[in-house]
Image 1: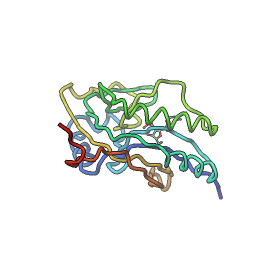
Image 2: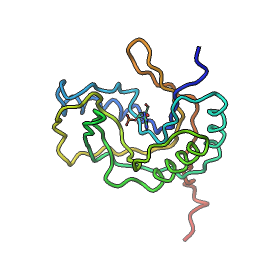
Image 3: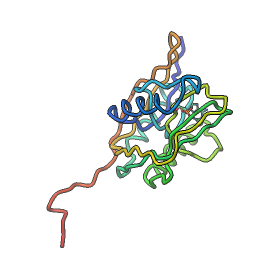
Length: 186
Ligand code: 2AM
């Protein structure tokens, strides 16, 4: 029995957008392009932690609970292909500052706790297809998938019976400004 779990912090894609994205993906990519990621598994990774102990996971969750990050929106309006990794992804041409700050915070806390962080620049993305090692024709620009993020979460990743399953372990809200008349000053 293993006492470690493979964990990562991520922004889940809201279920409605997950369903719409999966339909759009089927129209945009041929079956040979790569292996489609299940709708429920579509997300933006903020920080990958690797296989870590329960103790380290708890320490990182305590740190995550102290984060006060304002909510942000983004527009998935960019697509790309990393043939080496076999990944076809959706991203954004203008990453919101809040997303970059949140990822930077989580990644530096992870590194401080001894979780290796890739030296590659952080490029927020939703992996759409895996096993995409051959040339892929990408959707023409002009598509937009706007998303409002209200929370971030910690997930475990487990490979069982030929499938990757992600399970949400904990989630923390992003701060939304109160829209009350008390806040409105003229
Ligand atoms: P990917 O989608 O770009 O492959 C769960 O595996 C999530 O963590 C995936 O979104 C994956 O990103 C990311 N991930 C897996 N291994 C990683 C690694 N070694 N470094 C950074 N991110 C990783």
